[in-house]
Length: 117
Image (cartoon, rainbow, N blue to C red):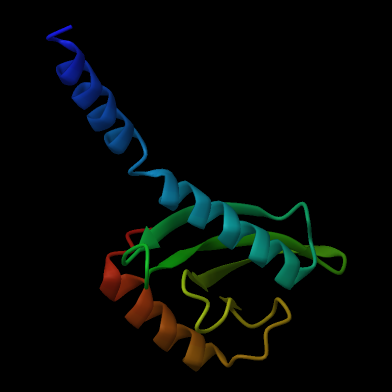
């Protein structure tokens, strides 16, 4: 019975450690779902996806490949975790944002926050 508190502590510690990455997986899945909806292609695929920032104010950055008309196109995207803006995708995939504005957001919110893509 003396080992019970140690066992309980070990279980709590293991639970806390194993759950620490779950928000990242959920954030990436949510971002991919948002992007599929934005480009209207449920079969869109993703590459070079990375989270930058933190669980409160971070963003998911990466590359989406989606069918636009008769063609499959690739473009960079940004989805903000806190939903204060976006999601954004480079022009050519139905987004009205200018290339210059997208490049600015990409540099400041992805690259400067640690995106390695």
